[in-house]
Length: 348
Image (cartoon, rainbow, N blue to C red; front, side, top):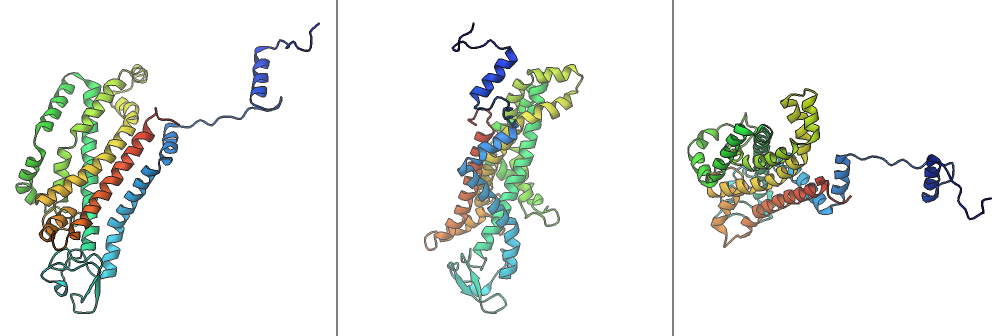
């Protein structure tokens, strides 16, 4: 006869249900709560939104893009001028100071220059900053898209096929890495660049944007190519690739449908960080006079013009410098946050 201290022997299914009921604090007849499965992107978003610094960087990027592409035409309409407009009434021996009221170009009184003028010709510094942001984002984003797309394509082909294809792509990568980028950009700007500056695609881009996009794209594909090649060399030996080959999937389908989704996180993170680098590169080339042509409202051109007044009006160098600083910092913060969020080994 069993005593009260002895536990009755139950079947496996009954014992498991009893353990769940006791351990989970549920009643004897209550079903356990189902756990919702979360996909990779949902988990990445949950990790990303807890990173306040990365969120601030993302919001700052959205605000700057809206100011550059939406705020610039609105400001031009409200102020009645553009970044290219001259104002003889605001001209002087030195650029006008911030918050200066001056008669308009038509002689009416009065128009406000919030950040003053960028030179003695009466160009509005604020409108130049906003138009310069538009040019910088156009160059940086387009060059990143083309450069990363070229690098991802060559890296996937080299890593997947190997052999002679891998050797050709690897040698081409090493050759491009050995070329002096700055010297090539200067030579390209003074030769072919003079003709390419005229291509604005019906006024959609400013002169010089197409030239810089080509130059930066040609010299920015090799880093993503090397990164993607290394990952594909590892992924092509995985079981899901072997299974796709066994069911008759073509190489193009394997690259597009099986390997590319595994590379999305790396592509997004690297592209975000590369945009910041391209913004700095565009500003540097324009400052040296081999990027956006002089007279165009680029951040680099604004700094180049402000050098002439760095003693008497030093803040003319501060405004475009702050624009470059905030833009690159925001993209770097966003890239760091995306890297941590898309890392599957991160804490959940």
